[in-house]
Image: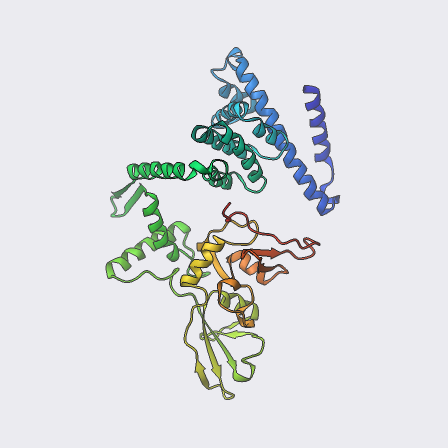
Length: 416
């Protein structure tokens, strides 16, 4: 074994000494993929060695109190990391063969192995060994698309796929247990400081947490480029605002209050032509790109002027994608729909697939959720989006990125 590892080490050193700048971009990407696979395979070897050394009692034979302490000194690890390594090595040793093969084959990483092993153990306890064997294959397949955090979330519904006959009952029992634990642990401590300030600490149950987030999230956005408050300070001020609103009997603003009202001023002759620049009621000018982006998810006040600049008609304000329509959009997309993005709905705008300024209708079939970054990216890049036959958003990459322009979807928010 040591000879093979020494050869592998020499090969890695040779790769490090190679000039990465001379490689083509496809070769660099392929090299990154190969490096990641090799890293996972070496992790499998490392876990096997740690487990064998732990089983032989090497640590105590060399004077250490336990294997974790020995690894801390031997590999210069933090004691917490060393303990996790020993625990994971034990888990890896007793994991189903499919999990071990997946790590040894470079198909999953260490954190995914941890999640898979824990999930499979739960399935084994709940539904038996046959269901646990099925769960291994399903989870390994999911690991090819999702990181450990997302894999853990998906694993909470693994019984739907491997033991559907007991899935609902098991989920209900787990939910009741979670609610009972949350009800037991909930608390809020208000500690008055000598200078009159208060320190808040506590744990909210799921329902109270949702209420709090719903109340303060719309109020925590920066008010503008000159807003220098930290996120913590904005949350503090949002909580104070909620208290003021509650005491005054007012209603909380929808999604943080009205979005900027964009007054697009144009003459009647060009009303039906392509939208160009926009003039704000404050006198500022916006580019056509900015108008298009804001028009996706803003309040629009069309003002039609005659030849002498006199207002002929000012339309009534109308929200484009809000209320029940936005809720339907959130239920469909569940977050930013751009491939690879995990931003939640509250960070997203509603984008018109066919621009509103081009006559695109305000309806679910012409809308998609996008976070601020990907909203701007879609407006300023060659990416396009459409709804597939199943009603889900698909994004077409530019030809320079993918010559075949294979449609891509976001897998982070989908229901599996």
